[in-house]
Length: 385
Image 1: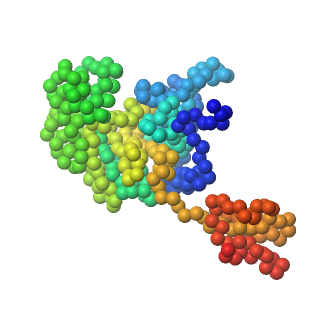
Image 2: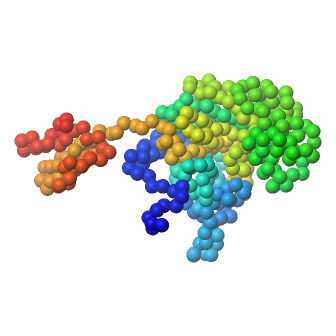
Image 3: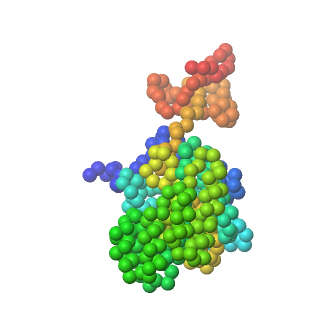
């Protein structure tokens, strides 16, 4: 095998796509800043116990591990940035009020999460710490929608769920971690027969409620059906009420449809409440995933309310419309001081000036050179090509 062949599901990003990704990254960060989110840049690797504390087996299996040659301790390359941001909020910032943080950087996965996916997502995310109310859930979801609008993708379908419904149905039932994982997998796959087998010894209300969840997906009528078929407990009522409120707020926004999948438990184990996925035409799965994860900071000694979302810019660039090329100016190469001064002045004004090196006059690249710098008398002027 050639030494320069890249590993499976790892790829270079070439100029046109890289330019598009960078433009999207700036749009997303500007959108987050418009809401008051502060940018943080966690390290790519850190001690494994810090990186994986409280995240569950799923993230552990996705994480590349290595030995630190300086300390001999195990280290990991991050597979998700949220635990790192929770550590920053808990230990480095340690603020008492609301903290809004955003980030954008690569993460690495030991395996792709679906066919043809990359193992090196470029993850953008935004998170709110310190507010337990629904207002923070709505702000996170609204920012996610604004980010997609800024990139001109859509129409958007917001799919809502709440992990507290499943937790309420399993409350008090002695289930080990492996059995619980199988129940979650059957729910996510909507495998009613497997779910019935796994829950055959559960109390009747829990067994019937879990069975009902498999069918509880669709439009707003799902919440009415859930009130009818799920146990009438305080936890169930609260989760359904919050889903109803959030859905009504989101549905009022232009170009947004709302759906529900109350059995959806996909994602990392740290989610603790309302969850959402944003779907757009052309994407094979949710383009954005987020929700509430109030326990994520507990392992760092500070159990603050938290809600947020993340997306992969590599997935986003595949469905976002390609922006028009920025107009550029083609200039000759030369040593004349007047020419070099003219080029420098144009670049200071924000223009892209591509100098044609000697012998390469016929070559082209991805820049749209609609003008040229030409001599006029003793000076230089920009004119249409």
